[in-house]
Every structure is written in structure tokens, then in C-alpha cells.
Length: 216
Image (cartoon, rainbow, N blue to C red; front, top):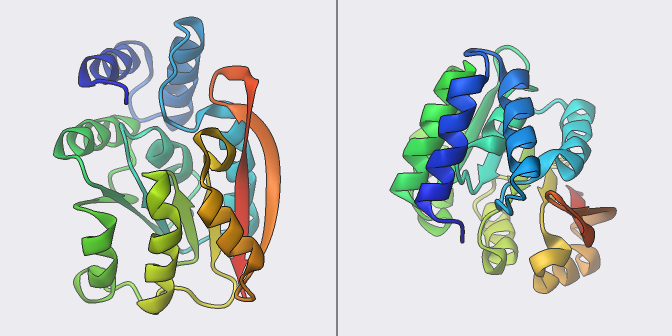
């Protein structure tokens, strides 16, 4: 895992060089910095990010849920695509990463769209209905601990948070990989899945991809 010092240097560079209140500027500065400095940061990056951009634009979620905020790149990337009156919730286990992500989202001018929730997905998901008045989620972006992909999607289903048409977009399904998740969504009659081949963030020589799964 990338350490806090690296994350602070990335976000510090963004805040120094990007335009405050401009998510597009934040993303451009972040991508330029990470690419030029050969950063192997665990965020989704521009190539796979654009695939998920298209998924957001296609499905236009009113309620989106992110599993794994990290330092806030994806919250900025997808928060910028949410339409007026919609909400983007992001669950992050690390208090330190959560604070950095909040800082970056505030800098990007998206605090009114993005709500961060501190805690483990195991603890938070069962509380979403009661504590955050979420009846169901339209789109889930999954980019946290790969061993949690499958149990958390099952948990979302068991908690009644998935409805017909709910979409899961899972990152890093090839590298480092989430084989049990892929086997589950591809074999379950509850989902129809599509794989979008891409490469690892800022590492074009390493194959990776996005798995899109629609709840039936």
C-alpha cells in the first residue's frame, strides 16, 4: 500500500497547481503528476476511470456508493458526474485516508455531492438504510480490499440495497485480481456481467480491467 507521505505529496501538489472548485482541473493535475512521477497509486487512473465514467453517464445514478475512498481521486472523478439532487456515498475504513479524501473533495467543490462514511464496509452497509436513509443504490463502484468484493456485494443484496437495474463496477479484477468475485457475478443468475479490458493505472504494460455487473 502506498504510504501516507506519498499521498500527502500527491494531494499537496494538486492543491498547489489545480484550480480550486474545478474537478476537471483536479483530475488533470493528479493524472499528470502520477504519470510523470511513475506513481503506482492504487486509485483507478484515467484509462479505467473513463470506462467507469461512461457507466455513470449511461445509468445516471441518483444514489451511488463507493467502497474504498482511498485519497479521494474516484470520489472527485465520479462525484463530478452526479446530477443535481443526487448523492455519492463513499465508505473508507482508514481515518487518515478519509481525512485526505474529504480535503480533496472539498477543494474540488464537491462536498455537497459526496458524503464520506468512516468504518468497515461490513459494519457500514447494514446501517445505510437506517442511518443514511438509503432505500437502494443505483450504482456501486468497488475498489477496496479485493477479498471483500464478493462478500460485500452479497451483503448489499442481503440488506435489500440492490434493486433491478442496480449496477456494480469493480476495479482491479485482474490485477491484483478478484477471482472469487468474478466467478460469483459471472455465474450467479442474479447478475449479467460484462468485462472491459484495460491496463493498470499508469502502467500500460500490465493488463487489468473493469467488471460491470447489472442486478437482475
